[in-house]
Image (cartoon, rainbow, N blue to C red; front, side, top):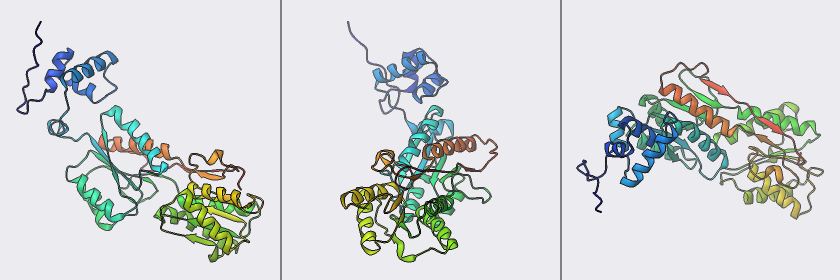
Length: 342
């Protein structure tokens, strides 16, 4: 018995969507929807189409699909880091919302560089996506103009703003810093330090909120601020903790701008016999993996990372569909998680 090779109708010799549809016994539209993973396609048809695509070695031509529909099926998501769980958690949630609608994420990593983000915007806007999700508001003026002039629907996540035409979802980093200061003061800490790395705008806003409360209470001490532009890490947190304790052994409360820094401090406190929280109380930020299991368990600020991603994606889909958005700025708040370290 001889097996005929499927006829290639494209000039490139590649199998076409029509061939996939014929082999699966469905319409071309159903085949297209099935290959994009749309929930509107029944499981039986989805299985048949995917099997036909595998048998024919079919690869979708995204450029042709965009031309045919006069619309891209890509959404650009710009984040400052792929190694930080704060952003990977948000990405997972964004993907879970966009994928059933047939959209694919194009992820750009700026590495906390405003210039790099501007370059990424130029690159992705050269073939405009259906929409964009960007992180925060700290960018070059040129980048702001690129977003505004592109006509591409855009949602900002992680921070809030009230300007007309801006759609965003996040929480107040400043108020979160204020809440940490109030907590340390309430538990009797009088010499409170702020330790920060990376020094992006959100980190600085946390510090601003923390500092403002100490200033109002008359207990602010500039010598108790330790800040470095180096990337945040567990090891760096331990190093900064030891530097601070050597310089100011009288410190009795420390707010670390991220949990990895605080986790590093807990390790070094254990190694050097510094009692937490009896000698010094330690608070982190973001409630990252491991913070609930550290020794002692870390007091921290829990941020709604996945929820931010989910709502940012839902908001973007509404904009893409030209739907009316009732709340252009969505404040998800934060939660101070009090555990054993403070």
